[in-house]
Amino acid sequence: MKLRNFIAARVPWIALLALPLIIAIAGCESSIPSRADVAAPPPAVPRIVRQSNGSRILELGPDAGPGMTLATVRDEQLPGVLETTGQVSFDDRRVSSIVSRVAGRIENTRVSQWDNVRRGEPIVELYSPDFMTAEAEFLQAKATARLSSSPPIGGNGDLAAAMVSAARRKLELLGMSDADIAAITAPSPSIWVDAPISGTVLDNKAVRGAAVNPGDVLYSLGTLDDVWIVGDIYEDDLARVHQGQQLEAVTTAYPDESFTGFISRISPNVDPTTHTLQIRCEVRNPGAKLKPQMLARIRIVTRPGTALVVPQEALVFDTNQYFAFVEVAAGRFHRRPVEIASWKEQGFARVVSGLRAGDRVVVGESIQVNALWHEANGESS
Image (cartoon, rainbow, N blue to C red; front, side):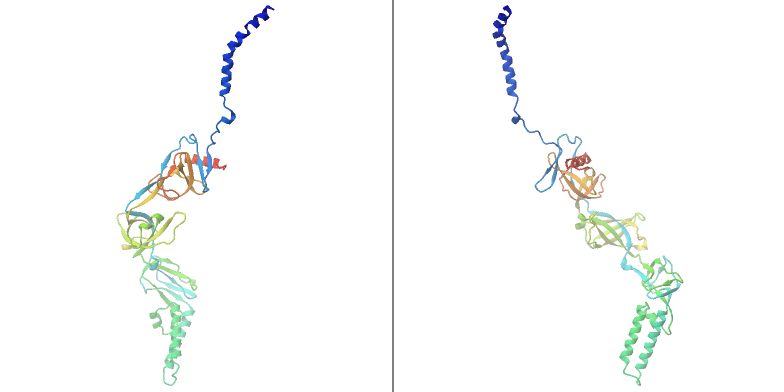
């Protein structure tokens, strides 16, 4: 009874002491925000943001690539001399083949490979009944023409002249020269074939005693007084060259000697893979020093230009194509296909298409950024 009265007498005091604690707890509970007041969590990164034009942008968080660095695509000034490499070849206007025009055999030869010959020089003797038949027809036509021109027969002169002309034309088609035809006194199955040009025997397929057929190539002849050097230039250098432009060529065989020439032709076709096209340079070759298949360095004096270059570290090779990640906004990158060519400065590549001067591209960690691109797209890199 006394204990009950003691507790009852002190309850108001305990309540008063507990009141500040109850108020504090209530205040803490009232400061907890409701579910509606909680802000939405930031979007997960990396992620792909699709643009209205259909392109895809990779959005990275601030910690996505701690080692990622950027570099700027820049224009480089080109000097007033355009340099390229080329290969020496024969001028095809100065190359000729000796082709058999009959079925027969090779009776005799007078030259071998790499021999020098003069135009009109007899070099191979062919045997063929076709020669004998054509010569007999020619002699018969001439005899008929003489008879038709005599007074007792007369009246058939035009026909006889036409027969002589046709027989002569047949001999010409068999490869006989005017001198050969004029020297015919009796039908013969053998004739000597003359060199059509002065030059060097490049290829010899004539073997004594071998059978030949119409169209068989017996010899190839060429001259090296003037040669061609065919080189490649980049598409964006095309405006710097033109036909007739003067040039110099230097070879490793003669490093202290320059061979002069000019651009004679520019190819109408561009290689879609390398974005290069060919130029054909006609070059004087005193002493026949330049040989076919030699490599030469071509120097063309031209007006200065520019070239777009990018660090090679910015390029990622993926599925048979180079790509670069171009910054379009802070933390946002566009994966752009790039076509490149070689560049004289080590560690850089020449941009053919895909980038512009001033573009900021990922250099450090570009491969890792490419892996994040595939991950964000749900692909396997």
